[in-house]
Image (tube, rainbow, N blue to C red):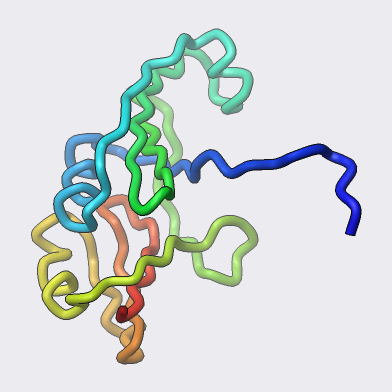
Length: 142
């Protein structure tokens, strides 16, 4: 297949969170992500590209794991939409998938970090959890 768009490279996946401290603790202390950087971009441009009314009051924290970059987006403003259930057959990003070596130990600690274990999804080799804001994360046994 010939590509006419030039080269393409992956940057990150962004996830909106309601509490940066809580979410950083979940991803860093529970799942082993490493802090990379934090940005507070100006409203001009951010409002346009993100399609969020000004003032956006956005803080973005970038975390890494094995070359993967996760962008945590926090909008410190009134009027943000409420979180909603997002089943995997709904169009759009459905979940993150991670391989873990000590699955049962990690799963047992999820509630201590503000997440939820979706016990009904446990099929032995995999189970789904959610982060504190409901983002689904599939844990595969490694």
